[in-house]
Length: 437
Image (cartoon, rainbow, N blue to C red):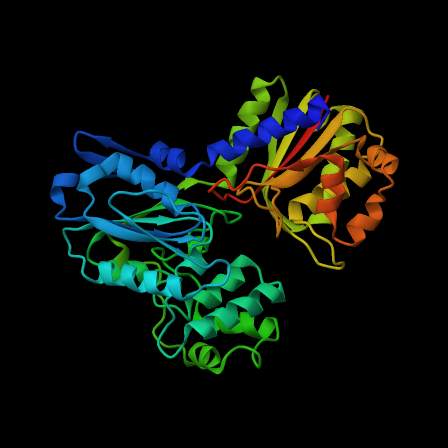
């Protein structure tokens, strides 16, 4: 990565990732003062609680739990969290259960059942601290009656393959579950519940992140059925799932339900906070900076062309911010597979951008996943500049052919422009960076 501008983009991206670090995120939003836990809008006098239990699920939940243990130590009575295989961390008071993601497995179901049992025994003078991060929907599988884990696995796989967005997927998952869509709060009632959330969802919709286990659910059985119909899955989903959705059995708890009277949901980390940290780092490095949007969604190569156009505008006119400039965006794009190569949405973004900014001087564009993983690769994303295509030509690489084959990984691997952070144990979606001087 010889260009200093590309190196600057990488340092700014790393600042965004650090801002999403689970432990630091929790400790920024929860603190202990004179034996009182202060989090969000509420104070929790610890002497008022008989027991404190910590439960949760998500790829970052083990690191979040370490922060809670730092705060509360021996005051924690026990608990259990479900994490993705390979994402465990050493804990003293809280049990860690590793399980499957993105497809739920038996370990996840066993852990979810034990979490439900802990909450089912909670009393009004207990405090439940629930930790939710990206991946929680798959990592907290407790199918509703008559629906089996195999049914849920098959349904999840069909939804993933259909192109359903996260809102649509979770409306279905909530209605074939015993714990999603506010039902974990129903199990915990009448205990006090504090949920700390690391958001991986564009827009930070509380009832979508991790399928909102402690959040009032705005979706209905009818909404879930409409998703199945929209993607032509009615005859492909397991009969038990189809029957469950058609029956409209006990609805998930809705806004205004009294079970939420003692529940507080606090977002401790998000794409927006990561983008703001990137702007601060860019300012410190001498760039005039702004956040363009943290609601970026759509086909990666199309969104990349828009970012390339912004880079051209920066160089031509100093708009929308004067040079030297840094423009940050965030969200989560998608890729429609047309070829058989290797890559991910961030690498594809960078490759499409590289083609559009070919020959443009003093510009770099980076796209990276804050979890350190982009698609089925060991890279978080890639970075490109106006020399990328020229350097590729010198190696006999044809960028358009790699893009057509969805083979962005091997393209940037040859150039040495992959971003490799390793798993970051957090996930607040993706960050895109445009630098111009």
